Structures are given as C-alpha cells and as structure tokens.
Length: 148
Image (tube, rainbow, N blue to C red):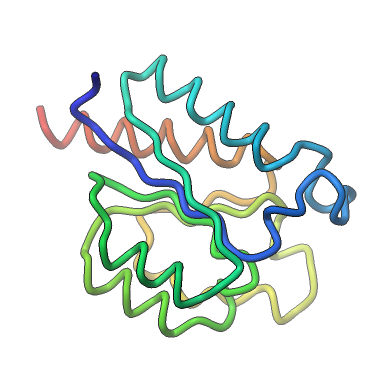
C-alpha cells in the first residue's frame, strides 16, 4: 500500500457527467473519471479516495476532516462563489490542485474568477477528464520531490 494518499473532491452537478452538456464536459461519467484516477494512482503507488457532493457544507466538512497528503478539487460552480470552501482550504493547509474539465476562461465571464486560485499549487482546466490525471501527476511529483 502506498504511503501517499490523495483525496479527490468533485463538486456540484459532476454526478451528472456523461449526460450534462457533453460539449463542455465530455461523455465520460464520474465513475469513468474516478476509475481512471484510481488506475493512475495504482501505477504511481498513490492511494486515491473520491468524494462528490452537490452540497457546499458537505464539501466543507470533507475538507475540514481531510486525512490525506494532498487534494485534487473540482469545486465546479462553487469555484466562483464559495468563501466557505476557500476558508476550509485555508484552515487545513494541504497542497491542492484546482481542476476543471472545461476551460473556464473560454466560458461565461462569471466563470473566469476562482475563489481558490491564489491558494492552489496549480490549476488545470480544459483537458476534460484528463485534467484530473494531469493534476495527480503534478501532485505526485511535488509530494515525492519535496519528501526526498
């Protein structure tokens, strides 16, 4: 078993992937995405756990009780509105990558602002489901390089 653990948090409406606006979000389901991340985690010897909620408070609770070395978070619509999620991320002080399936900067103006971007190690957007795997590779590199 790995000594690295990365938590994935998927925000609201991501449970609808595969049917919701496939032009923006692709045709893969959230289960497909999680399976891909877990498979890459196995290759990298990283334990992956995944969580999805449509409720801001549940996401805050998950962050506050985080038991992982790092976090990959797709706050979805909460990216642009949630001071609560931002404050939870500040409180736990864990390295995280903000992920988006679509390029939020090519979308509506209100989607261009992230409440978390200034705290994130990095932001990956626009690569569809591969955005998560890119984030995992980046976090793995960061965590293994900083421990050596």
